[in-house]
Structure formats: C-alpha cells, structure tokens
Amino acid sequence: MKKFIPYIFLGLTLIGLFLILTGCENGRNDSAINPQTGTGGSMARFAITGTTLYIVSQQSLEVYDITEGANPVKTVTKNMSVGIETIFPYRDNLFIGANNGMYIYDNKTPKDPQLLSVFQHIQSCDPVVVQEHYAYVTLRSGVTCRPQNSSSSLDVVDVSNPAMPIMVHTQPMTSPYGLGVSGNKLFVCEGKLGLTVLDVSNPAMPKFTKTFGDLPAYDVIVRDKHLIITGEKGLFQYQFDDADKMEFLSKIPVL
Image 1: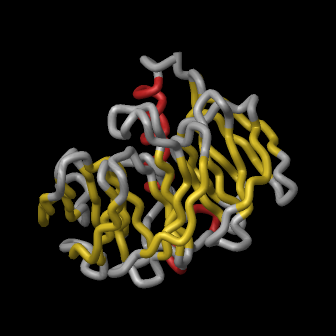
Image 2 (image 1 turned 180 degrees about the vertical axis):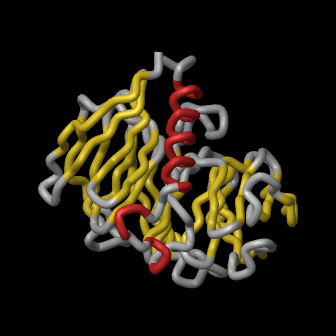
C-alpha cells in the first residue's frame, strides 16, 4: 500500500484543485468565513485565495499573482526552515505545517504575507486545520519526521491571537494522518485503522465519538455534509449526518 499512497495524495490534491476552481458553486459563499477560494485537504502543499496562489516547498513559501491565469507572476518567496509540509489559509492568516512546528502568517496583504509567529513542538509531521479560534494539529509517530520513541497525538492550539498561539489541549491518537473540521465535527484520518470522528462542540476539548474501522483514510476534504477521503486504492466520497451516519456516494479508483 505504501507505494500507492503518494499517488492517492496526488489524486486528492487534484480534487482539491478542482474544488478550489469551483469553490463557490450552488450559491454558497465561503468568503464570509474563509478567503480561500476553495477547499483542499490538510496535507495540501498549495492553496488559492482570490487571485493569489501559495505553494510551499521544503524550505519556502512561494506566492504568485494569478490575476491572469495563463501567466502567473511570482510576487515573493518567503524563506523558511527545512521541512515545510502543508498550508491552510483561514480568514486573514496562513497556517503552515512544518517538521518543527506551525508557522502563522498575516495574509491581509495576500501578495506579501508576513510572519506573525511560530508554534514549536517536538519534531514531527503535522497537518493542520483551523476553525474559529482553534487550530487542530496531528502528530504521528513511527515516521522519519518524528522520533521513534514519541507518541501520536492530536493537539489543540488557541490561535485567537495569531501572534501568540497557545497550546490548550493534547490527547493521544493511534495513527493520525490528515484531518478536517466542519461545525462541531472533527474528522481525523488514521490510515488503515479508519476514520475517527470527534465532537468539538467544546472546540478546546475534542471528545471521541466513533471510529469507522472499515473506512481506511489518509486525508480528507470536508464540504458541508460531504467528505472526500483519500483511502486505499482510491478517492471516496461520503455523505454524513448529525448522528454520524456515513453514506457511500462514489469512488474514483487509483490502481
């Protein structure tokens, strides 16, 4: 399975790009909540807000003006530490996951974001998603970017003041990969172990609800009541309700 995972993540990235390019369909206005034009997975390495494209490489954040889509123009490169992994725009900020922590950039000037703060943790791979005043970060053991004797966890960080992020809660997880949040539900992908749902009615204190052990998951895009999941050998779409009932909708196979 390991050899297929990069291709599956690529597939989810392409789905995320599609959602970015079609993010305001059906009259839904996400801009009131999030300036991101669409929605990508928590492991995404690029994002679009308005007419600006952001790409994270191993050591930098690159910003492009895509006002003319056929002729993108680089506006700035922000040099960062080694091990930059993921990017998640939320409101006026960019949240960037790295091996050594979470970087928060002020994005009020989209073509030239400014570093506000760095929330540091033990070396680890760390996808991040944000909702309201809280960022949710998964840290997974047993990988090259995390010490072998460390444990896996879900961390909750108060980012109400993005210049001073504060850890407010941490809890053990079994094998967390990507994650997504919508309303009072937090979805954490746990690889072959399935998809775990947590209640974040109290956003600072997630509570375990259930794990769908028959639903292998590595990353997830959450839109309204729909999930697009990177699973084994494909991309899967599910619909869920308030009672955490999952209904299978479709599959794009990746062989």
